[in-house]
Image (tube, rainbow, N blue to C red; front, side, top):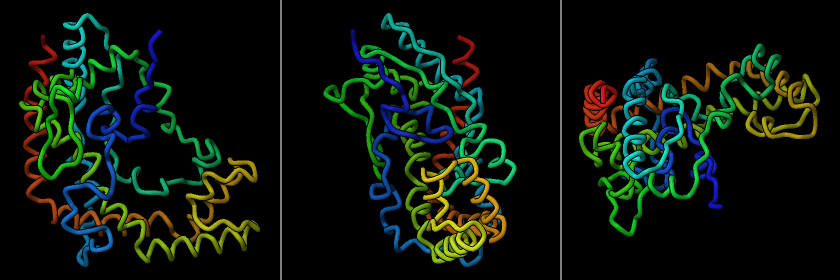
Length: 293
């Protein structure tokens, strides 16, 4: 019997719409290989004049309509059927949220009390499909038969896979699909990395750590470390974490910092953003035709 693959296991944990693109360029996502490499993470600066809607604008940019997402799934399924294979149904209404990719993820006291660190939407693996080797190979294609890449975007996809075929149908060309889907996973990464290293986040971590020590007798350096700490009950720790975040206004500070760096992102990447916007419009235009087959 062939290996059974889980999509999230195959490429690691990806968020939002990016999770629907598993098996493509997203597997190579890293902060050291993006279209933003003209400036390294350390050279990316926070905007002085912050756009308070930068987070919302980035989410709007990368969010496809449910119909467009469903069309991509339908195109893959049609390609698989032509090969005598069955494509498992996947969720096609996952919203992209750039804030969820900026660590630590938001955590309210109410969420901590009810779910601990396991929020209502934190277990997408329960809906992740499992496929055998033959289906996986048909989905990804064979790199030996040629790859398709886009200049300035890391990674490539095999031109003979059903993923590539779905890009051609949905986005009008495989290259445009690579640009959009890989852009979701890769373009913001250097800006997120720079934001995490910002001195304001470092200061928030220090204030949070002081609160945790003074109010709860716990010595933990950051909320990220608290989320993986196994020395005490995780739900109680999550409540303490959330309480201290509220006291030091952690989420407000993190949102301001993220908006500052995404303001820079929107300015730096304007040329690519115009292409992404056009790609999304094409996908949304083609979706009804694909779904009507």
